[in-house]
Image (cartoon, rainbow, N blue to C red; front, side, top):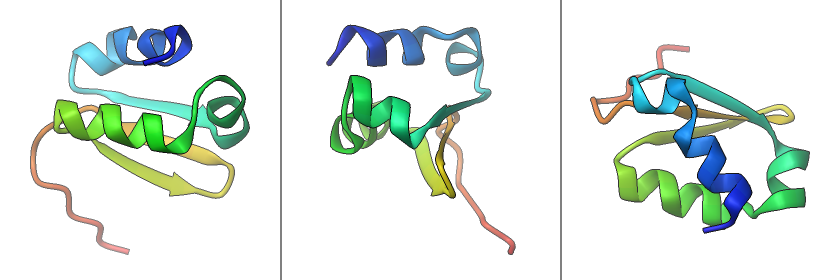
Length: 67
């Protein structure tokens, strides 16, 4: 895992069940989509890509999207 991605997952929000948001451009510049998704999956988190953002839901609970 890249040092940049390691910092993403060390953020307070990531460690407290919160939400972390990063731009797609930043992820692709410093890491990769595959590496982000793989790391989130290993932690049981969820990743949503919307527009130019990745939204990482740092919670292992069930994810329901309503609209």
